[in-house]
Image (cartoon, rainbow, N blue to C red):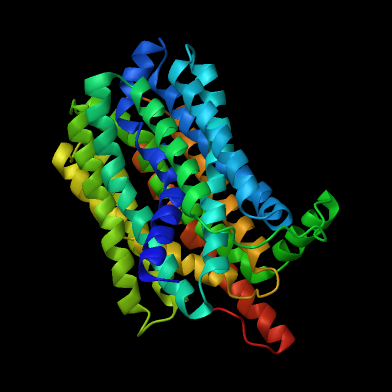
Length: 407
């Protein structure tokens, strides 16, 4: 593979992997405008984010077996086509119920890009190069929250919120063309693989029975849901409560996204001296303390706009340390069923994120409290599960005279 081909493939895979992050972040500045246009409340618009997260959670479990059975491109084409049609449906819907449904279908289609991109990295690059390729994909995904809300904010002001979904549809049509013309086929279809629900469910059940997976999947699922509370609540908090413009909100979101990107890079250095378990325990304790200060400060009226931004920045720096270490600890016990474990882990995380964003919507009271309260609860919940689960793993290891597989 030439250097030019390598660059083109990574560029296409990166674009596929960012469909869902852009779909989540790009329309956030438009929340108040959508609520006004559809004659509904902001908490109802927040449910469109919840429906998208539920769709991604379910979609990951569907596309894994399909990509193995039918090859990489056919399920990818089908998913992208569903995404395009659902995006157009989002743009032209005239009710919040229709938007919630279209967002769910948009997620079912869009997550094909995310799952297929990960599978194609394994197909197209040698083992020695896969880590480098995944790092580039991760960097692209991490950068997308910095630019998507900013672009969405300017588009909403200039052309209206409908334009955000039409642009997402148009970009995805271009991606379909690039996939057809420039992306290699990857792994060929394997007719011997069974898609019978019993076989698929048996593999998932085997994964769930592994104690370490269960502990750290729950820790990661709850702890990494804090950003979804922030994503669900921040448009209302900053645009409606603090009266910032859609463009300003995009820049605030970009700044806070930088907090997570920076700490992700710090994690590489910390892993040279500390184990993942040590890092995640200290990080969750740190986030719990900051979460309590956020809740108390909002209740007492300590923070203005800039004070809240500063505290959110400090809290979100922990996410770049929590997420990768929770992933490593969750998948450590697996080799043969690593694919099923990865899909199940992602489904648990995004499903939990959907529940958390729904909670922010239902608790909506025109203050920042639902957002910061759920963020604090996520950190505290993750810490408590880690402490209890770690003790259970150690006790089990002592009984079996074996070392726990934690890293």
